Length: 368
Ligand code: AMP
Image 1 (cartoon, rainbow, N blue to C red):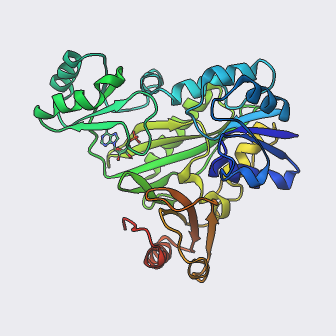
Image 2 (image 1 turned 90 degrees about the horizontal axis):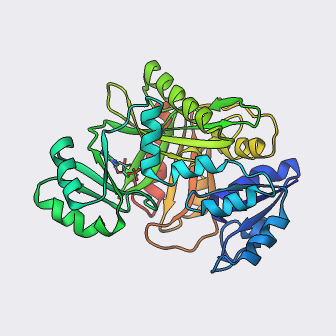
Image 3 (image 1 turned 180 degrees about the vertical axis):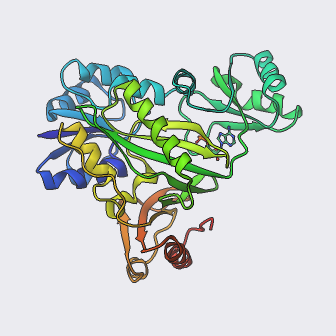
């Protein structure tokens, strides 16, 4: 079987690395000839996204998936008329559009920050009056790692927010959540409807980018773990999603508040390559290929640490016990995710100590 992946970034690369042991073969659609997935399969695509390049890609595989959500639903629909695509277009339409996502949370009674759709400056002023400040303004499509966002903290900020983001209407205005920490849950749904969830991850960000994740989230209450599980199951079932899906949440200390979904393998799930019985990448490929799912049970406490902007010394990282290095074949650039490190330990306390040892040899600063 050949799997076609839209996008040739590190997520596609790690999907292929998980699928090769089953004798699966891969092709990728990406305009960049030196993208991280290029060494792992046939590459299709051009700058203009021409119909010819899409046709050639369509002919190259038996089943299709994607590794980023900002692809055209029209393209996915076009492929779906000829060959299976997982996840389906419904999952994509929700994750691509924050208003659809909020409506889904409301429909499934999943707690999320109160929100308003903004189409005009008057609507923005009204949202400030109704939801209070701080008020988080987000573009509806295309935002990631905190880009396309503005936090209104005083009435003076309303005009500034409008100048910055007004042209991107409609916008989403969302009440500010006073959270203690950020969590995510990664889960997979097979073609037969079976769902398996990884334990929730605790995610720490630095300058708007994920710095590291610790799994299982330390000291997470039984109730919160059950909530996270129930929320992602409800979403997977409602969308009839096939493949991996991620839900990012705020932990307020008295319950979880949903933030956003990703219809794909996720940076906060990279730990599972060495830290779980079956990784998120292998499980995604199993689901897409119609194979039985693997266990999502963690082997022991694990952490994933992103390598951002500059590469560390390979030998210095590998000298640290129970540490694994994954480099994506990218050139150095400030803020760019170049790779990640997984570290495991018998206990969370030992794990936190190992994270500090890794932080000391990383050229990028970590938020510890
Ligand atoms: P997002 O792109 O929605 O994941 O937002 C990026 C980051 O902004 C999140 O990881 C949070 O740290 C912060 N953030 C987003 N929405 C809110 C909110 N409603 N209240 C407080 N912080 C938020």
